[in-house]
Length: 183
Image (cartoon, rainbow, N blue to C red; front, side):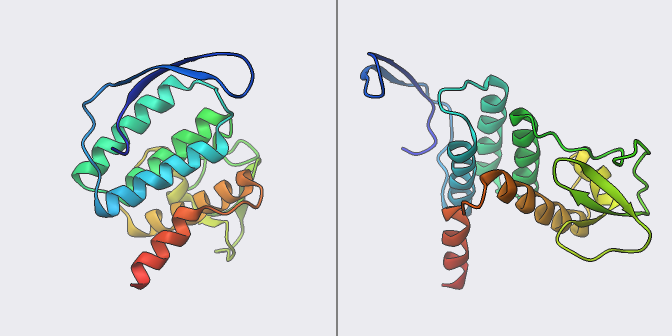
């Protein structure tokens, strides 16, 4: 059963070790439909970006909570919250409330988000993959996705950031999800 918590232990030396214990911990609802795709996407992020055998207890707790939310109603806002928390946990925290010069982000302003640097104020409404409204940066910092434009711009920003940290590797779940929608 996918997305069920297990307690595992193993012993041995080197890459190939012997599984000593595998116990189901229970308590996680089963995912189906869109929620299943969303869960696979989170898993693919974890597998591709987390260092092997590197424990992240806070991230795991948040991951389990997001999976519970997916079981009720899969929402894109939950994905964005997870992506932001995930990048933060990896040490790639986003600068969202201040620009690169330390000035507070203006909700009415426009910014170009420079990866590994942060938002750079634009004189006029910018165009480009990482051009974003100040309101979106503030909303993202507060996990407020009630504005449809915030949700769209946050998705574009997160995709660009994740693509950067994946180093050119593409995610299979995105391809599968697009193929599924084409059907």
